[in-house]
Amino acid sequence: MTQVQDVPRTTAGTGARAVAWLARHADHLDPALADPSTELFARKALVEVALLVGLRARLDPTPLDADHARLLDVVAEVAARPSYRELAARDRRALLLYAGTYAALRLCGREDLAFRHVLERAVRGRYATVFERVPYRHLDLLHTLELAGLPSDVAGLGTALPLTVLTGDPNVLELSTADTYAITHAVFYASDFGCRDVPWPAGSDAERAPELLRACLALARARQDADLVGELLMCLTCLGAGPSPADDDARAWLRAWQEPDGRVEGPQGVVPDRLTQADPAWSRWATAYHTTIVAALEDLLHRHAPVAHRGRARGVLDGARPVWVRHAHDGAPGASAVGTSAVDVPAVDVPAVDVRGAVRDAAGWLDAHVPATDLRAAAWTVEARAALGDVATARSRLGGALAGDDVAGRLAAVPGDVGLHVAELAARLGDGAARSSTCVVVPLPAPLRALLTTVEDVLADVPVTDTTVDGARERVAAARGGRWWTGYVESLAGVDDGPDAAAEPDDPDARRARALALAADLVRRGRSPHVAPGTAARAASVLVRAAADAVAAYDVGVLAVVVRGLVRLPAVPRRVVRDAVEWLVGQQQLTGGVGAPLGDDPAERDELVAQWTLLALPALLEGAALA
Image (cartoon, rainbow, N blue to C red; front, side):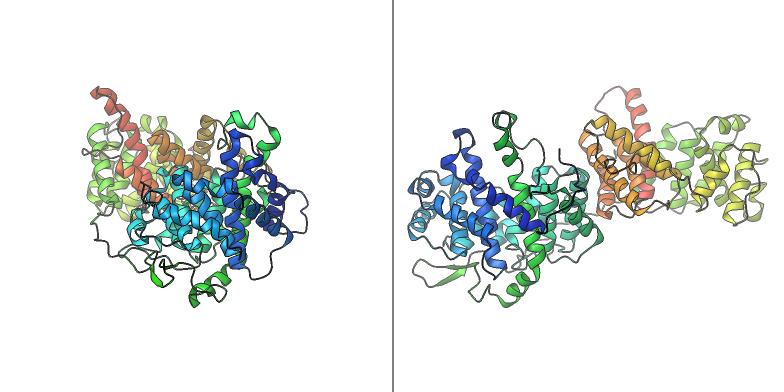
């Protein structure tokens, strides 16, 4: 697998190196030279390279350099063969493979009337444009016909765009790789690669699109998926999204991922092993050609986005008519092929997720199903009641948990963090100045009194002098902005152990353990832990990927723990945290317990739901900024 490069670069830019690598391997674009088992790869690569060259001609008015010209010559040579162009007449389901090639030639000033004739007949054949397509593929059809100048009666953007994942505001943690590609391609086609404004459906929130894209970008970075990183950066440029540090970091990462010769390795598992093992040289090309094209396109759009936007504002490109205007068969101007006006879609009343209600119900479930003397459960249900403004119930619940002759033993038996949490609650909910001595119960148990004194000293900015409770002083100081647990995140989670530390392990169990250790450490550091920026960015990648893994595996407890780490890292897109919280709320039962155990034994169900709910409650409180 490619490692982030730390070697000297050539003087050429990222895009130039990528195009040069493609030009050096241009023979792989010729289907006639391909093995029958890889011929389809050559056809797909040909049209994708054609798109690259066509966009270069549209966005950059300077003459093509030698490498772009070499690629264009190969595309033109293949397209000139009757054996290639006539496939559009025989295989009409594959119309876009050939129409895309023609469109690129047309954009580069190489009109081919014979090729156009074949494509026009295919479009008029009442099948190539009407067989069932998923929405973003319908946008692909529209866009290709636009660029090719092929008239049709295909339903416009207003029909397909509202049905895409892009406009549906999905939960990013549940998106598959295919879903994410559906989002990126919908942006490409609807925006004409940044050459026009997207006609967002009426009632949709256009500001959500960059938020969605950046959350997807965080996931792609975490998975080291250079292909999606490049496409998502392109999308942000296409939408005219303002720059952000996260975008700049992702772009720098993509540059570093590129190999010195210009090749950019793509994600694993895309090309079947039976093909890669047969020909190592072909495998090296096949596993990188698409991502190398993406890197070249991203660089092109990033450098020439202002030119594209000026063209959009004029309604022209290089002085010509807008390429998306459809013309009738007789040459008279026709209606717009895409219908760029906003579509009036009836609003759907989707209630916002009620996190406060979910917190209340989860706390009620725990109070009903977990013994009142369980200090960990009591601490979080008290926290929940206080966060919801029910201080009287919170005090009563805490008093009940601390009642009994065995409270000292129970406090001594729980982990220090639980005892500290109980002490903090006692400090907050006690009766003013007398809380140190009276608090919730009288007399105050000695172990709790010692912890509480430490907490109050820190809250009052009084130097902590002494405590008999092991570890409390350091923990409280960390929780309240005092001394840090220096080095603990770095050494335990392995996110700052050198240049290779950011590489995620392939073993899901190892990734899970790493994320849990990291999240636990961040929680112990308090609400706003001090973590160096570079370490924070790497930690964010670990936890973002862990969140998506947990959702895919239905690991409710892990997700809850990871959320508590995510909220402590400002580098994490807030969309990721929001969607994680909403996913947890979506798993809440009517009774208030969290999770779907898939079992019928009542005792086993209650035990598992209790574990999940106890972990989910603090995640909901902190994720929604209630506590």
